[in-house]
Length: 351
Image: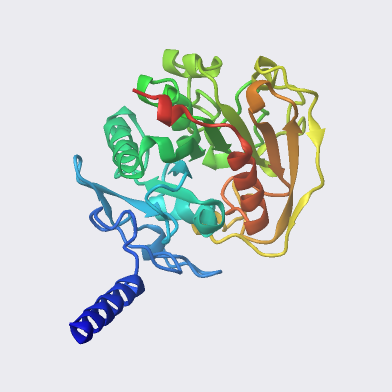
């Protein structure tokens, strides 16, 4: 009996050890098309990302619409771990994987415990017909994470993706869930800078405006110029060459809403490394307001301190950059730090 007991204990010990050595299944492994590898799926190289790669719409399937998107998250994410959820929207004429590398937050999901969904519009321009798809993405991710484990939920949008963020943040679904909005050249709440001369390209959309300098005002556009209801943090980022000579307005109605202090200028964020992507179709002749080749640079961060409720309100200007040069690593991380420093909790309270 003693021999049998020892043998049984040894077998159980081996079984436990073997079980402990099994690799942990990624939290989203049951999502169709979801894989978690390093480097991330379809990650661009440092330079010369091929067209077929940046045009990829993603492999994760949103099961109700059967449309795909990218999902980036820590491969070692625990079922009860608290994370920051991000929905990142590309601009007009762009693709999901281009946006994924224009604002390469995918490189920081492990360090800052982020879950980032980057969807794709089949028309390459967002409209109300995409709203159900976007809502379904967030609903399915939150169900998997657990609402209590979403510390904060941020919208990120470049150009027309920023304009779309401005629109959907006023809808019932997103208004009750979004804790912050990062506008990447997608319009500034509380006073927008003037536009540089974009020539024949036409200026990217201002808040409430359509793409192109000749686009006329509409009732819907006028509505988006007003400050939205609800409470959330707001960060505006733009290229210096996108603005006219007056530059960035010093005041912010959004900062005033939260009683923030006077804007403070911090040390510039320097990058010795270029971003991943740029608009290769608009380089002959070059158009500096639209964007030149990806290259190193510097950015200036202006923060409005002491906002009510700890809200983050900030402006970021990338020096000598235009509308389409991909963000460099250090300024990307600086923006992520601002995002994760803001309060959250709306997802847990949403019904």
